[in-house]
Length: 271
Image (cartoon, rainbow, N blue to C red; front, side, top):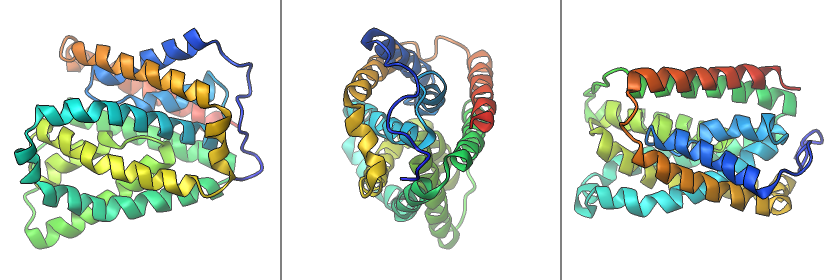
């Protein structure tokens, strides 16, 4: 870990109800659009709870992993095992790139100066806002690539997604779902289930890389904080899932995109 990364929040320890409520709000935001909400949680960890960039990324990754593990059974139940098994080449194709990307992304993150990492995170939050709008407001088609082009494109896309997911501490569903639709022609529902099958091993690889040096100590130093916020995020995601479709995408998605853009500006100005 670089010397300018701190393991503890810069501000006083927040109360358990406040941490749970913050996690719940993030979970609801993610739930109403069918995602985990980690892209909203990361700026909150930095701006509200005062964690340094790398510490926030690692804590976000831990919470994302918990949320994905909780969501996995319900999401897999929505798509039959036979249906997913028939599409295993899609998951394997993306994993061929994402596992390497996750290791590379985590390696780069631990070597970056904190000031650089803030700017990188700001750029990636803007990317997430663009992906959010593209997935939910526009109509995604299919590229219909021949197999000889589809396979390397899947590996390259997987690598990029693995890098982004590792550096931001997210599951990567925001990018995986549109990629699976565009490259492999799957419907949104199937893409959502396949994305979890790709994101889980990808997150574990990033976790393994972060655990190799002192940067991982932030998790042990803030274990209660992490568990409470993860619990809040999980509860919020369930509540948000119940609200899925209640708010029109044409109103909700631009609003969430604006929240992400404001967060990106704050991250870019962070020192």
